[in-house]
Picture 1 (cartoon, rainbow over the protein chains, first blue to last red):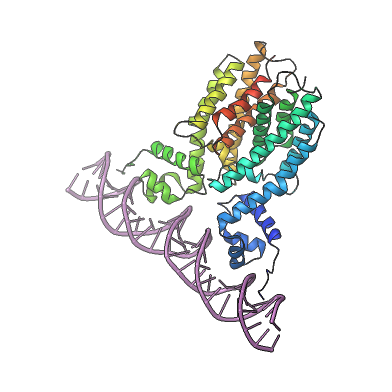
Picture 2: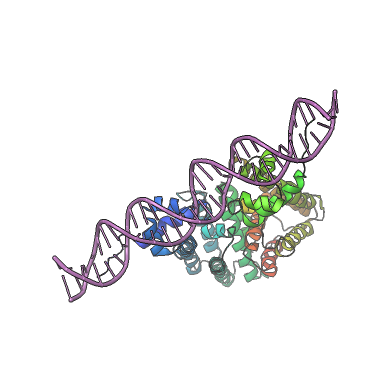
Length: 193
Length: 193
DNA sequence: CTTATCTTGGAACGACTGGTCCAAGATAAG
DNA sequence: CTTATCTTGGACCAGTCGTTCCAAGATAAG
């Protein structure tokens, strides 16, 4: 009997994600979202709830659709150090070229936006996922005797994670891919034997 | 003949800096600033101009009063690697304890706030200042034969700078000092011979 | 004191904020 | 078809945004 939605929820959320990603939550008004999605406020509020919920959903979508695939690929890549190098190479490409160049990472950006408990949980999920993937790749690398001895793998994973955040952040100010790459290579170069 | 200001401009700016630091530009209203400084809108606007100018001034103050002293101390410390370790130890203390715990770094935070050209210039100044200080300390360390051979000093300085940004960012989500420290130590440990 | 100049408090501005509401429209089961 | 239920567009809400303005107050030179 009831009517059915006249739009694709997932598609709309993708548009919202882009807005928050590029300009941040505070700088993105409901009006902007209405304009970009073509939806009315009613549809927006009945489907997603308020702005905060919308942001949380976008954040979750980003983690699921963008971050997690990167993490999974890294964790599934059994080459060891080259897997990590490849991850960063992909990251640099994403951050410095293409349609999202200079946007940074939605989750990294979220750190500066007075996070609610719910959003903070997503940030921690993101951090845990990335550093776990790094740790796994490092273990593989150790198995292949690619690492110099005596390395604390968990600590190194944490360091690489912090480095990735640094790359994400700096890419937003237009830092060149070449410059960022030197920093990444310095880190990776110091891990080998 | 003229009247004279009834308040201390520098003092007021310090209050404004704290507001922007903790909550960000977008989330801080002029009302909040009026409340926190005790000044009227007239005084605010006649002394500093609009919100954007106020933000830029706060950013500049942060760079001059907070960041630069840290950079200078690092650059003046001629111990080499211990100087760098000391810098990070101080950074961790600032970011994770005391009255500014969990606030991150105003300049790092600024990366996510749709920077104007003027603010972006401050960001670049900050980045250049920090990586130059790191590069100098690394040169000293090389002179003392503390570094493992074959290190690209500029690249390593860039890496340490990105790492510092990572620390700043993560500290905002309540990351523990101990966890952040492991990441830092992994980076520093990989530089020695 | 007077007077010229600047500062200050506070009212007011239009634009916009996130959010609500409801009549009109769409849908599909009966 | 009717009818019950949900969705939709858009008007509308009170509140806040950054900013402007001006009369009243403060200041110090003459």
